[in-house]
Length: 626
Image (tube, rainbow, N blue to C red; front, side):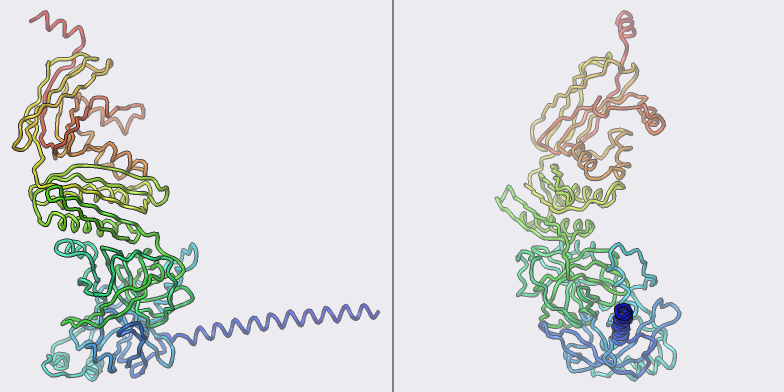
């Protein structure tokens, strides 16, 4: 009996312990939820007249505060999402000429709670009025941190500009918050008389570009800049753009208000934009409060930034600085801002370019490490090629170049090696990028598989001399042939201001070739004429190449500019081609009636000759008739 009572007591104690454990657990969870709720202030709890503070870095790496006054809540027709309209003030704001590009993402707090990030500014004011993207929207970006997350953020994409319609109350409220300065247009009078709306634009820091000048700088701007964005050369003297990227560097402590940078490349070609961290949750950081390039799922370099100063500008001041430490990867670039992961780094693409000027014996080498997005890789590498060539030959104009391209696939580690020659009377540098751009285009747009690269090497030898030639004449030993015969093709080419040359090629006719008329087409590899309907057919369907191996094969077979192609096409070839997609048993050997002659010249020109393929009986009759 005693043992039975003890057993019951133990069971009751166990129930009490379990109940107490779950009670404590629930209290802890509830406390966690309450703390999370207390950390933020949703937009529906904010009203005009509230005061708060903002945080950002004005110089160096130290976070400083400034004052924020809430003017109104902006929403309504034409605006997809609500914003806070605020006025910034304080000594640092005044010293820097108002809001600086690079302040986007600066967190704003009211009563110690995070309400959002500074994101848009009215550029024609004295740079103290701006919009704040509510934290309610930004925090949704953390939904993307879940592995294999399929949740779609439902926010409608905003335009680059938020146009705020002004009613009488809002107009008066804004007028009261605009300071007046000497020698500055009286915006208050304009607001009261003429302006019915204000356009607030992203406070987007200019792209700080290092390593590019002249037309290469213009090219990178046109390829990378979104509407309304600007760029400047990164004039930061302390930045060492040749320092190797150290992805093993210790992650520095980032917090709300820290200066951060998004880098598209580093090295001899460096592209950076500066902003401010809004909120950190463990290893995840929200920043900017607006898109950078608005590309959705991305892979950018994310860095801690040292700010030198705020550079004055008529439109808007902007921060100048340099990334002193790589801290992670930007994985999302969306309407409400960017999301970075401090716990991982991008698989960057290493790009190395060598240009050798044969005439001057000048060798230029440059390199960059680029984020693993092929469209960005294409833009930056193409500009780097042009920059390197311009520096090597120190002119823009005529030239003949041999271009060797090596690409390594990130997944398999396999190499694609391709070489071609180019000539241009006007601009050899632009010509040298043609094949590279086509290869990357197929990597991006082929229908088979997405191909990521890990390494790019481009080696260019260039001279000013015109090394082109034109096909002058084509001769055959006979006009009529039998199946199984050999056609000797004699091609006379005329190099630029040099003696003529003769190239001989042979085409073996198959024994089972159908008798009939045929056309022999001879053309230079750089000729713009299409060699046949088959070539036209293949060019249109190149995007159907199924991934790396087929793209590699395509370029191995691609006709080069320094080659001469001779191809015999039966008159009924077009009919045969039309059957390709209808009859599975129809097979055409593309090399059967084609030969390729190698030269050390860029060959142009196009020649056609008609001939007859006869059977033995018809050929004998023709001879007897003669």
